[in-house]
Length: 106
Length: 121
Image 1 (tube, each protein chain N blue to C red):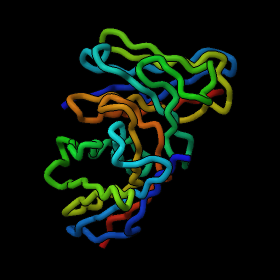
Image 2: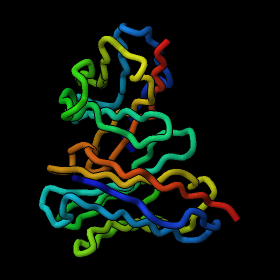
Image 3: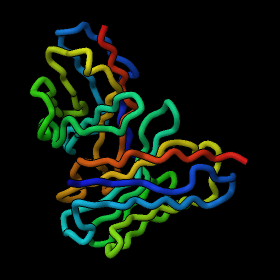
């Protein structure tokens, strides 16, 4: 079955740029999306179709996807961005999530 | 306003069958563009996709759990139902339903609040 791999944790200083990667075989041939999950809350879509932002998501969130890796980039990271982030893709009509990355803003 | 709400038992015993209901509002399950998935999350762990039902009633399932899962919908009640057989303590977690719009490769744009299910004797 298809797998997506994320680093367990990423740390960033306030105001700096955070990058979270998601790796999967030929992931660039699929659409990747990203979800933010704050503690105790449901996930929220922050990036879809590799690089599109839903309405209401700040411009500091951006995405890219090429080759085997999709990347979520948060520019000018704020304390409120501290959360778990999950990548997700579809493989033959089957949904797949990455293992999640805990973003710490310190 | 699009909403999804999960309901079902809080506690189930090992070997029992779990039945969860997702009641949606703000959109129609008969809409050709709409689909609903079930996704779960064990305490402190990652999200795991379970099953999806498309507008044309086609279904897809997690490869590892396919033998235990059944997803169905009642368009007239705006409900999507998931059954999972032979429950085990490792199935403990929060179960979410989430919507996709526009086809199979579209993202989950709306999520329910989740329902915590504990499997214990």
